[in-house]
Amino acid sequence: MTPIWTHLALNLGQIAFILVLSPLVEGVLHRIEENIQGKSGVSIWQTYRDIWKLFGKDEVVSEQSTWVFRFAPIVAFVMPIFVVLLIPAFTAYPLFFAFMGDMVAVGFLMAVSGFFVALAGMDTGNIYAAVGASRTHMVGFLAEPVFIMVFFSVSYVANSTIPYFVNATWGASWSSMLQPTHLMVILAFFLLILADEGRIPVDSPAGKVEIAMIGHSKGLEYSGSSAALMKWGGASKLMVLALIFVNVLVTPWGLAPTTQWTAVLSAMGLVLLKLLAFVIILALVETTLAKLRLFRISEFLAVAFVICLFAVSIRLVGIA
Image 1 (cartoon, rainbow, N blue to C red):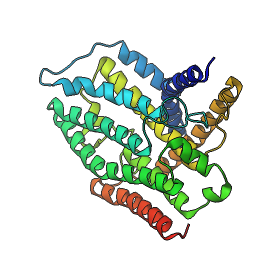
Image 2 (image 1 turned 180 degrees about the horizontal axis):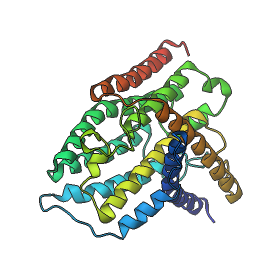
Image 3 (image 1 turned 90 degrees about the vertical axis):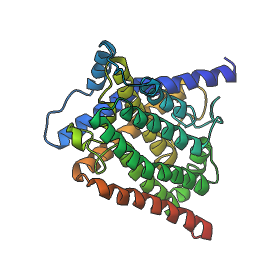
Image 4 (image 1 turned 30 degrees about the vertical axis):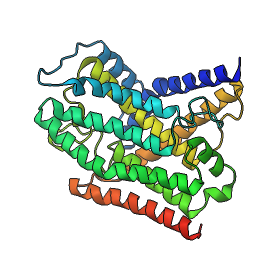
């Protein structure tokens, strides 16, 4: 097989990796959180069952809705697929589509997904969906600049904007991993994951009270296949952010150095172990913190923004 076809096959493997395993990652996260809380917990395969069940149900669409409502689930499902083509999922070398965009493009694609989903929440006129969408706009208004700032900080500190090159730069030596700027960027990105994914302390993913929901309220009006795409896209987005966190920032080692399938499969197994460690840490953080009041979320995201500014400033003055 020629190198081009090999890279294309690996690109398809990255897409399949995300689509097949993202519901499992979300299911493991829910199970660990409930076990920590002393509950028996649902099966780790429950997300697969929910998606399968939703695909088999009829879809009801409001007569007041426009094309935005119908288009948003597709955008939410497709954008994580685009992003995974740009990041090192399980290979240390750039693949065929690796140079389509850089770290800033990753943040932009994530923002486009959130923008369409928030618009769709207001499109039907449902009061609870509109309240959730307005809160999402507030969180997004604060989170998206931090998103861009985090990716800019990562690119500036690593002297590159391509995720594969950032991975290679920080994986070259232990000294680069222990720089204060690198540790600050890791902390800021983790705080951003909590905010963007609606995890505690920003939002409660298990909360189903309409008046208090932020993330879940945007999809209240969806049913059938659209609801399945929204749920699947949300799980894929969480896994993509986790892959950026573990493969680019925290542990940029263990990825496949060659195109041999044995190296690729072993790298996939190691990446799954990294994701398991990330899920355990995320579950511990969520179960040990309390949900913030709505107007305290801005302070939470401001901390991530200031940390990024400190990282860039330290790099500019040459301290680290």
